[in-house]
Length: 159
Image (cartoon, helix red, strand yellow):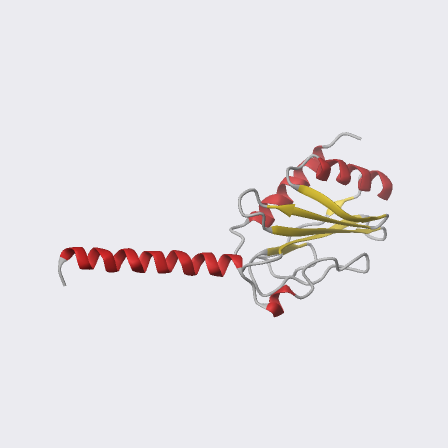
């Protein structure tokens, strides 16, 4: 095989690898999608077996995060969190009740949806949350970064 044939073969391999990566990122298996969204005020669904989820209820250090403390009453904490979410790009609050919030975040380019849920625990005076990609396997740390940003804004927000 001459040099141009080798280069064509290498380009083909690269395209195949990139295509495979896109498929891995943008598709999920049906069993991984179960319980990803809308678990409701009764509690948060566990993270799936994919590294695209963080939760305050996870015992896995790669997926675990600290819950948010109440700032004053549950109502004040709820209102503060809603203000933070409404100030974020591509965020839609889907479900809202006194002890539960479900928001959707859409990615800018491919419009992928991540579900973010918050459960207000009056006994612990904490807000537990879960953020997970609906589709795909890897999220490249997007859910953790988002929840760190939400946490920072929530803790810094003025009453």
